[in-house]
Amino acid sequence: MMLSLAQTQVLSKLAEHLYPFLPGKAHPFADQNISFEGVAKLLGLNQFWPGGSKLPAITQLLTATLQYQSNSFCPLLVELIRKGIMYRQNKGDSITYEEMKKLNELIAQVGFKIPELHDLKFLGSLPRSPSESDGMSDAVALSHKVRLELSTKLLKLSSLSPQERGFEFEKFLNDLFHVFNLAPRSSFRLVGEQIDGSLQFQDETYLVEATWQNELVGQERLLVFSGKVGGKAKWSRGLFMSYSGFSSEGLEAFIRGKPTNIVCMDGLDLNDLLQSKLSLRTVLEQKVRRAAETNEAYVSVRQLFSNVS
Image (cartoon, rainbow, N blue to C red):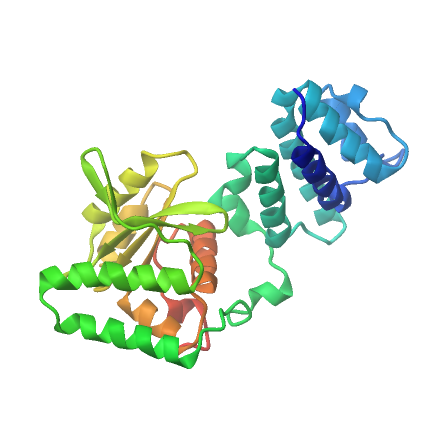
């Protein structure tokens, strides 16, 4: 395939990003597969590895593979990362979540999306840079006025009639998602089902269901929404927003024997993130990571952040 100028430029950036993942050529007494040259040979792409200076060689490997054997491009990246994880761990310098996030962004710019590299459990298992691990470090600088307006809107919802309340709750969430730059999309209908909207987070589309009801959400509704999410693309995820919260029995039954593809938030979470000046993006990051580590669909903001009470 003929590569565009944009693809050629991105491949150069991708090579730079991959540079620290592996040595170009393994030490004579080391595992020869744990190197760029070794991975190329392992996948039958050694004709595309020119040797010599490392960065130009990586660029050539990526470019030639995509141009002449495009069906091997994604397997090549997966294997480079697989071997890179082993190599970096042995050096005490593990590949971080931030590095993988940037890598996925570059791969998308080339024109690919590799579900294995977007896997919730995989990404959640990666360590984070110190600057990203603090719950407050990623807080979006909302003015006191904006936070107060959102808090007031949330509080006023309880005085509305049930029908108005549900509609206004969706509008509140849409405003909330906008101020935290999550690119929300309003309600849309699919055949035989209703999804309340979607948002964009960490280069992923999350389907959103929002509910304001007096009773706690139980296993049945969680299963229904999880089924809707699972019926879309393989990498689909969901965010269930229930103002009243979720029953502990329902949450336990929901995750029993099956991996979760959704995370959950309740009204107390929303109030806590606004009052504690947290970023919604940081809250979602921590919920996603905890889901990957424990398979819990719901963990409260107070449990995730020790400075919130």
